[in-house]
Image 1 (cartoon, rainbow, N blue to C red):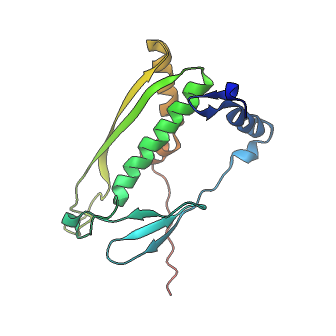
Image 2 (cartoon, rainbow, N blue to C red; image 1 turned 120 degrees about the vertical axis):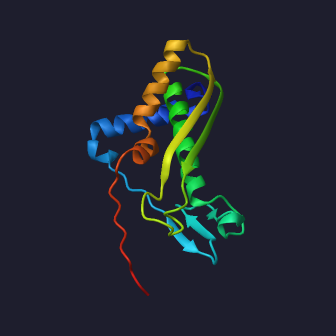
Length: 173
């Protein structure tokens, strides 16, 4: 692959080909993603995604786990940060903007009362805060436009920010 098609290590031709494919066949945009999770005792689990090494999960010692891996809520925060970083890299590259540095800090406030069964109510994050540290070869308006575009188009951001129907079926045995 010629290096002239790379910016920020993003293969611009590959992204352009995907965009062209979806434009010519809008049904090609409908994708399904999967993960399969296996319980490994106590609060340890592993998620298998495509052909990658398993993604481990555990709970901190204070929550009864053995603290061998990030817990699920930390992984949700990481998923949001990773998705935003991909959005900045892809869209900066498409706009000809070179990224010199990009870091995304994500935190969320979560009250454990509902999770622990101490009261009814909301068991998830009360809020999620993100700080994007971005240094790029662009002026202030270009950075602001990039930022707004990434926020508008982040799949994980939209998933977390919207009421998404979830169906959970129990297959006993």
